[in-house]
Image (cartoon, rainbow, N blue to C red; front, side, top):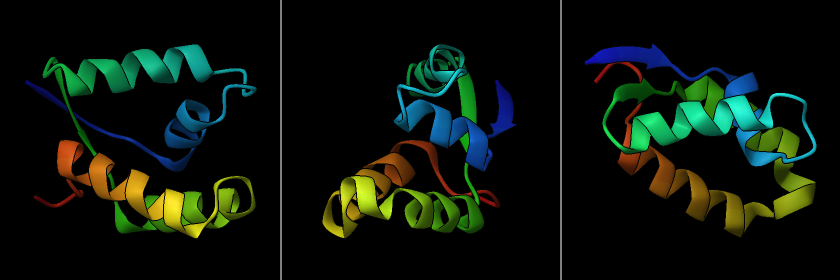
Length: 78
C-alpha cells in the first residue's frame, strides 16, 4: 500500500468545497478511507487547519472532525 502525506492544502481543499482542488482532494481522501492509500497527517497540519477553519466550523465541530479523521488515517510517524 502506498503511504502518502496529507498536507494542509489537501485537508483544506477537502473541507472547503469552494476551493479549486476540492474534487481532487476528495478523491485522495476517499482512496485513503477505502484502504487503497495510507494517508497520514502531522500535528502541524491539524493545528494549521484548525486555526484557519475555527471561525467557519467552531472549536467543538473541528475537534470532533479531527478526532475521527485521525482515528481513520493516523498521525505521521505511526
